[in-house]
Amino acid sequence: MGRITLSKVNKTFGATTVIPGIDLEIENGEFVVFVGPSGCGKSTLLRLIAGLEDTSSGKISIDGRDVTGEAPAKRGLAMVFQSYALYPHMSVYNNIAFPLKMAGTDKAVIDAKVRDAARILNLTNYLERRPGQLSGGQRQRVAIGRAIVRAPSAFLFDEPLSNLDAALRGTMRLEISELHQKLGTTMIYVTHDQVEAMTMADKIVVLQAGNIEQVGSPMDLYNRPANLFVAGFIGSPR
Ligand code: ADP
Ligand code: MG
Image (tube, rainbow, N blue to C red; front, top):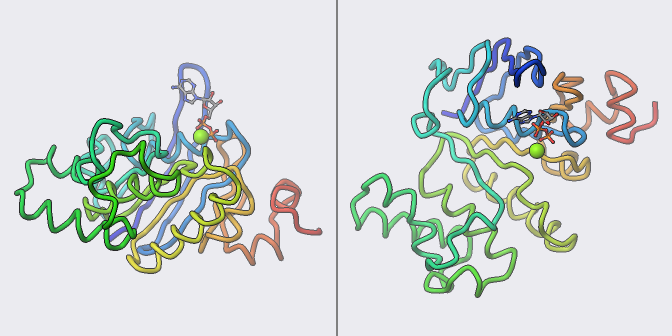
C-alpha cells in the first residue's frame, strides 16, 4: 500500500502549462521530497496526487488502481496542512477526531484511534486543550494526528513547517522523519528548502518550471547532479 505512479501527468491553468506531462514512480514506504524554487509547481503536483486539482491529461494510479478523476476522499491519502488549519474552538481530541466523525465512525473506534495517534505524537496529556493553548510544534503534531487517524496509504505534506521558527523547524523535521520510521508509510513532502530535502528524503524530485530535472537519493544528487540547475540548487561542486 502506498505506491503512486504518475504517467504523462499534465496540468494547465487556462493558457499556462504548469506541469508539462511528467512520469514519476513513488515506491511503497518511501519518503519522497519535491523540491524546487517558489512557483515551480510543487503544490500543484501534490494537489494533483491528492485529487484537489484535476489533471488536464495523463494518469495517476495508487497501488495499481487508476484514481484519475476520483474524489480526494476516495484516494486513501492524507494531506497534512500547516498547523493554522486547526479548529481553534475545538479541543485537541476533537481536532484529531474530526475526519473520523465526518466519516461517521463508531465512537469507541474513534476514541481508540485518537488515543493511539496521541501516544505516537506525545500529545496524550494535551487532548483537552485548545490549539491556542499549545506550542507551535504541538499544534503541528495535532495537524499530523488528524492525518494519522485515517490510516492513509500515504501522507502528503505541503511546506508544513514554513510558518515555524528555525529552531522548531529543525525539531519538527526530526519528528516527521521519526514518524516515517515508526509508521513505514509513504510520505510525499513538498519544500523549497534544500536542507529539508537533503536531510529527510529517501528520494528527491527536483522541479523547475514544472519539469523534473532529476530524481535520486540525496547522495545521487550531491555526487552526480544531472545538470547545472540541480548542482546549483543542491549546492554541490560540479
Ligand atoms: P510552488 O508550490 O512550487 O510554489 P505552485 O504549484 O503553487 O508552485 O504554482 C505553480 C505555478 O502555477 C505558478 O506559476 C502559479 O502561479 C500557477 N498556479 C497555481 N495554481 C493556479 C491556479 N489555480 N490558477 C492559475 N495559476 C495557478
Ligand atoms: Mg507551494
